[in-house]
Length: 158
Image (cartoon, rainbow, N blue to C red; front, side):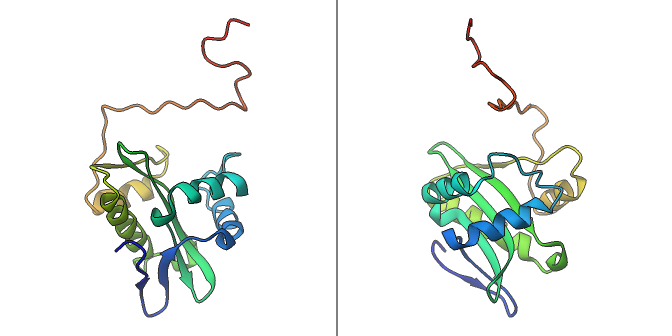
């Protein structure tokens, strides 16, 4: 499946390209469930794409970007980021197709497991993932460090 286009009568899934980044950032900016951050810059997305070319996918309707998924593999496990479908195109199986193709690529790359995260308030996404067989891991808490909000590194004495 790696490198393969998944075609549908009206839309298709293929690897993301640098030329798609501006449209991705635009899509993410008006989907409240994504809650884009300063990390979602052209440069950071391009860097992620360079490291994860095969598992960074887009859904296109002709040339219009209507969905995205970023899959990363760090040699230990896979992670899904920014699965997003334009609201006008939801309910057509696009999100599921993006997710399934991304998971297949991550598995081919050696990922024994794939994780993803949603905001606690994003019940729509949680229901979607449960419907597809994902399980919630209540024993795990997620912590983040944001350099823009913390002037010192952890452990700095200064």
